[in-house]
Length: 482
Image (cartoon, rainbow, N blue to C red; front, side, top):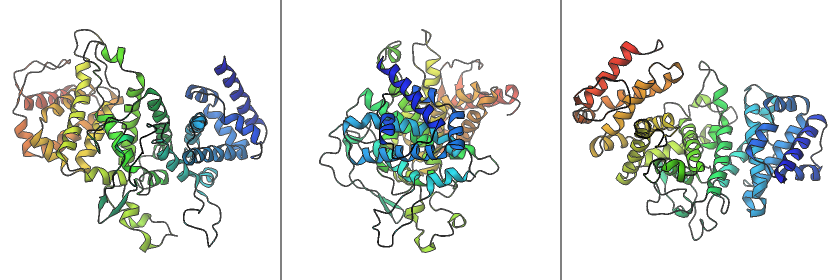
């Protein structure tokens, strides 16, 4: 009953916003909105796309107030993290997640540009920390803080007795300050021996914050392939800057959540469905998507922003490597330990092989299959491209055929599906990249005994034969677009 009442109250408030102008000083009205008990489904059901566009067109002042107050609420909760206000934080996150795509869908929209990026006039004697900041930057930074807010997304004691967490860069190296291992979402990078506190409530809150960040970074989706500029998005520039709060924690936590995920569960038939809650699976999916978006920002040059894309009002001597490098690319490139590389390879092999293993069971559906295997393939490409030490390690120290098998399987299965032509491309690029290494070619001499759940002809041979047969089938029996 309580949820039905809140849903009705939300519908009434949204109706008021669409019909009349509501003053920012109407505190009772806005407080009622933020204090409602809602769900993500309620927000997406009661705020359809056409209503957001109509609100922007007919009642822009209401949209400005709604957006501004939601951001202000998040910033306030970050600075004073009182548990009784966590519900309000989730309401703000859900509303911002729903509104942002319609603010970013038109790159030439002056209203959205002014709302997200304009700032008030600065006073000459104003301190650096007190200078007004654009709402877009406040959203990104607030979300970065919320991902590790004690009692909300991590344990209440996660930051006890820890040192400074700031990130800096100089001489193309990331200075490593100690980070609180208790704040990591899972063991792995930055803490293999840690056992962070986990809870379904934490996972659900993390998912909502990650979705907000992913939504804020959706601007490139509205660019055509011909006009796409990898340096264009200021949202992505803000999210990958070196002053992003908790950047190393974000990178390590996203990576650890992905690579430590085990879809098998307890190793018994239907164990994943019976014992594994839904939240970790969804968390892995959205973590992989966000990590790809963060690593994808920037052009072919890994380090420096092209000088022709520097704003007219920026001083050339103020543009340095620290500001313009993608912090997440830099963090990925800095990984050099064998433990970290082994952890990543095991994660890639486990998750990619899960796809054909889940389809090759005696009991139908007894092994859960991951949904984000395409994202895992893209992440594998990113690791190979951004870290020069990763590929030599996995070729010499790991069984690379554990990666070859799922790549061949996936591209063969997708060969005739026009909707999955991108999957075929990424698999082909990976094989091309690997085939340039002598160690890879030697590793392919390993005998192949596995029976894959496909209609590939049976053969006795090596993994090299598997690649040849797969590519031959793709050529003679592939889709028209191949």
